[in-house]
Image (cartoon, rainbow, N blue to C red; front, side, top):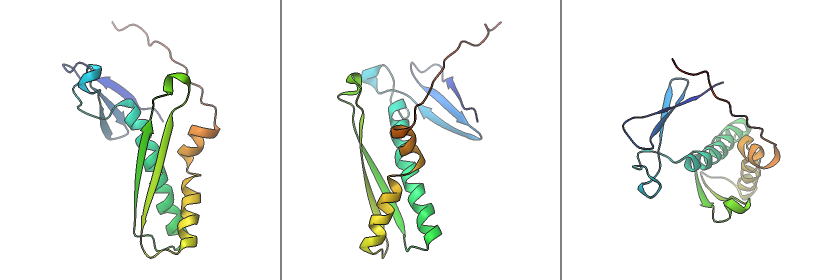
Length: 136
């Protein structure tokens, strides 16, 4: 699967991410030279983790027949030590429905094993960057 990111002129920093038939605006706040017309790249990273945890919990609860009625996920970012190599995300789950304490603990454990949590913490990600051929 390939996604594309294209510049959205005439905005100074805004870009549009294209994934299959979907788009997402990405920008920076004015303090970073943008117009705050969309998520920042860090926001999309953090949001991916929160969405993965929510979707994993819903999928698991359905599979196990648990009475989960709602899930809300908040992700708090602490990037104060990012340049030193530590990026902290604190995730809080709010589970709705008549769940037992054991079911709530089970869903928390499942959320801690969502695919993006594993990707962010247990996998070596290799990134290569290349130039496309000159336009012309």
